[in-house]
Length: 472
Image 1: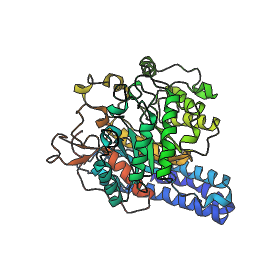
Image 2: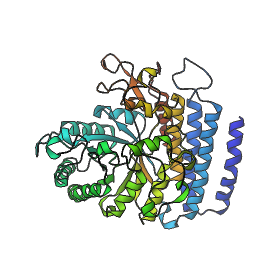
Image 3: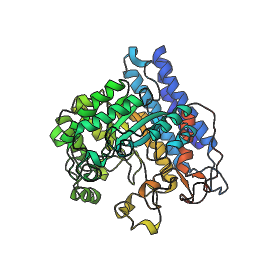
Image 4: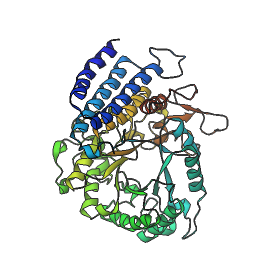
């Protein structure tokens, strides 16, 4: 009751202003936004149980968590009011709400149904060039064709991230770009021709600011050469498909100085994590994006990709106090775009997420020693993922598709139990090596996101009746 009274007192001033001053077309947009917000709160609070009911099929929610949801909804409504009043009347009704596309990154192509069951609309999937063209001109389309068939059946829109040059196309180590960018251009033309009308966007490569993903020496100018090779070929085959830059690995720290980006991060102390990345040859994400613009890359992409991982922090965390290692790092990337006169271009969050604890037995496996500080609790992961979407809806009118990482990497057999990607996942198997006898079950984040999507759509409350079991 106290929570309901608190929300009512915040909503009333906005409602009075709308009733008193707004014209019919402004009100139609605002009331739509308000309806979605109220539906979200009503359905979310009604659906999730309270307290410590260990037999509940859905995760418990604390009053503090509910207040955070309510606060974000209030912000969304007030932001909608400001943006509505500031938008020219001729364009107000052309903007669909919400503007953010709800997406998930998939490991397994036949798991598109999980996206639809969650009430999300977008799926991002990795297409490995090395597997799809094992030799020049020898195309293997089975995986792509199956993915597109599943997506069409479920009514889910597809974004392909294409990377991994085959050995015949590169002289560098695994992960290096091709020696001849035209080979990649030929491949992308073949893919876009094959998938024309069925793929909404193509993400070009993965985190090229990492040495391991660019042959040891990341180079923004060379990455622009890649964009120049593929952009016209994709557009010739499917003019409606968006060409999306790779999301960069978030490094934190100041950057973008050559593009005159200063702001709140200038001169801050680097985090130990950032220093480790720099020592390994990683290029600052802001510097790399700046390099794309300075190298003439602007005409060769339609959308800027981003990987705004949250690390250990809630999505509302301001960047400066944590050296930019937060979801809101995307705001610095956006500021850089605007400095380069690219404000009309959207950002798509191709990957973002929060990682869980795999257990002490994994802490010395792989690069976990650099990740343990990022670990969050299961309920925190659920809250942070949901709140990231809500924050973007209320603060980022330039944000398009948001694809959390990830849906199902903990369900597939080919990843080691300690592989970090498994611990970002919202779905898992108790025994991933035996999928036939180990059904998919869900972490709290799955239900949190599903409840959000159902409420935002104004649809019925419908949850998959699967028991959340174990601590996977």
